[in-house]
Amino acid sequence: MDSVLYELPGAVKIMIAGHFGVGKTTMVGAVSEIRPLRTEEVLTGVGVGVDDLDGVETKDTTTVAMDFGRITIGDDLVLYLFGTPGQDRFTFLWDELATGAVGAVVLADTRRLKDTFTCIDYFEDRGTPFVVAVNLFEGGHIFAPGDVQEALDLDPKVPVLLCDAREREACKHVLIALLDHVIKLHYSPPLESGE
Image 1 (tube, rainbow, N blue to C red):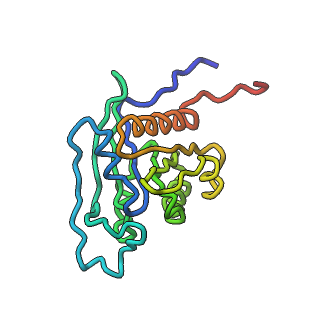
Image 2: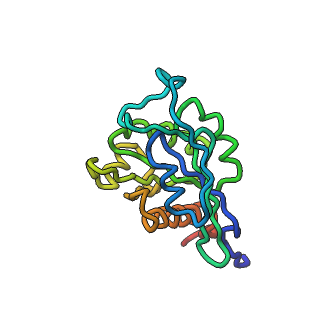
Image 3: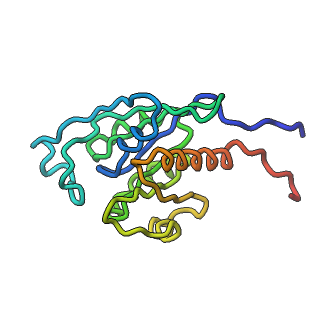
């Protein structure tokens, strides 16, 4: 069998997903090398009784369409980041944002971990590779990645990382882990029988 070079295309679309208030806009803004496009709006009375503000009572804005950013990883690799809206009433946008994405970062908040299941189910159902990045909020308890993986009932191959979505280097580490995961799943040559 001829050797085949397995590599990512030069421009890669990545989704940054998670529930409301988990830090998606913050992550895209922290890591983007361009001024990120944001579609944040002020929370109004329309969302009362519709949007769940438990655990994020002080949040006063929300993403209503997407966040967009870009980061150059190397001379031949650019990531285009698409942050999803987190509220249930905007999830109809996810299918459009997911078109062409090679993978996703699912941001999680251990104070509201149960809210992460919807995002995980979304990517599992579509066969989209993802990593879980636990955003370390001030005052929140820090759990070991293995404990989070078990609590979310994740496949052992799904990487779980701890990060601070405000820190550029931490966000870059998460994106590189996602790319590594995608390459291992989809771009690695198949093993020959007997290997």
